[in-house]
Length: 423
Image (cartoon, rainbow, N blue to C red; front, side, top):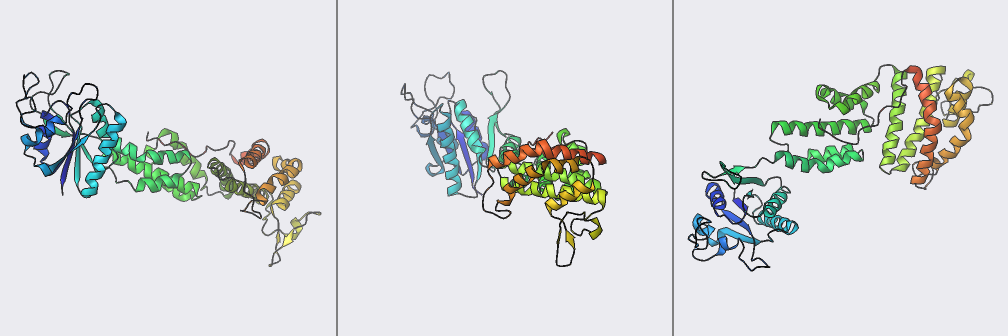
């Protein structure tokens, strides 16, 4: 494997010589400055391409008394390249360093590249570090040693690997943390799964947790509550404080009591619809709300009246309610018929809701009926959804809370998280 060293070159030759001597690279790329445009004074390129003695052994020396760095380190002409960059233009330096790394990989795809940011101006060091961070396999290093003051490293310089795993990891996962803001947990899981696991045990733990929690909430978002429960249970002892409540919520969605389980899942469907709307997927949101309204009537009828809307007994059909029969001869109640039965067979918030809101309910459901996910071709607009959502919050949600309070669910559960934090 070809070893390539990329280093920024400043006023001191010693760190560069140390880095080359220790790494013994086959190729060296020098990031240097050209002549100063204002003063015309030579830049650091002189240390690489200068003729004869062009470097002072010590800053206090009156005259140059050392040859250029390639000569000092035994580099042949074909073993090094020089890239010129401004001394303090961070954007320009970054682009130069980026180009140097890309070119190195283009010419030698399997190269082992080390970026040494010891020399040069502060902007040059920053530019090389930022460019190196774009490539997971580029190793960062600096030449260091013991210090007796804040000015410079004295005798005993050596090249040391710069610990940048945490910084690289945070940069890599940043787009997938942002995916959580859109409740795009599956996208986050898929993206982080493509990242090479860090070698640091601590950072690998962070990596595994982020990947697994993304999967847990992705499964939850897909209504796979059992899988979400299993994953969250694994992390239960070390779940961050702001995620611990979710384990209790998802466990309720798998409750063995069918009445409590369905009530919890009604709220889960409501929150799922809110997430689709937050993504701008209003047709999906409305389709879920339609199912929520239908399912709520079905749950109330079955839990309070032992009526199954898919197979209503003849004696359970009140006078004036007209149901349809399927091919098997079973009487079935669609959404409106189911709510008619609720209003006639039960007492309380749900019955009152339908009696006072059936016209509004019919009007709002027309949005769904005209949608391509139902019977039409009209996309649901943000305005349509906002009107529907306003009615849900004012009329439907209070009714559903009143009904689920009877079995212990007295508040709307938390929405799934849209921010990721390790602790």
